[in-house]
Image (cartoon, rainbow, N blue to C red; front, side, top):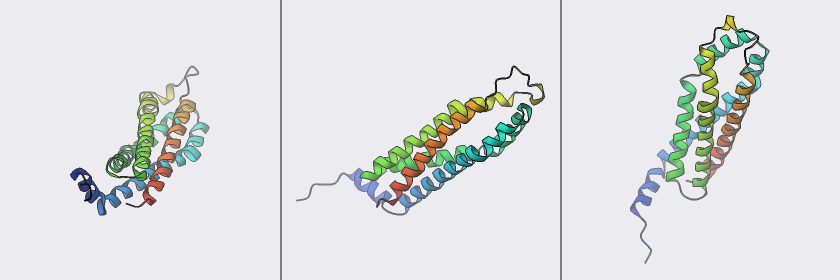
Length: 169
């Protein structure tokens, strides 16, 4: 006589057996791909441009870039993080560990963003671009370092999400 399967496991398997699992995987793929792509573009194109600007212009341009970034990117990061978490909790087998790793990588993206990049962004909001003197400490190198860390975390999340997606449901 076969051993009984716990009801919770049957429900989770049924819940993720079809369209819902595919929808969550699609959300995870799209969001991590977008985050990784945007971060990559910032690293290879936007940051060199910002570094080439004099301090006052840098502050002005950085503010303008931030207006286009919010609230879209935080919402996209949150969607991917939540999809990864749901799949890590509800999936079985090797995919579970991969979804958990993708979740951890996306939490790292959020952590670096909120604890490192955003505080620097906030200091620029209150700064008068025309009143920047020689004593000003340029935040660009520090911001770039933090950005590269979160870009690496986003790349890990994307790679692991791709691997987890190709495993059978």
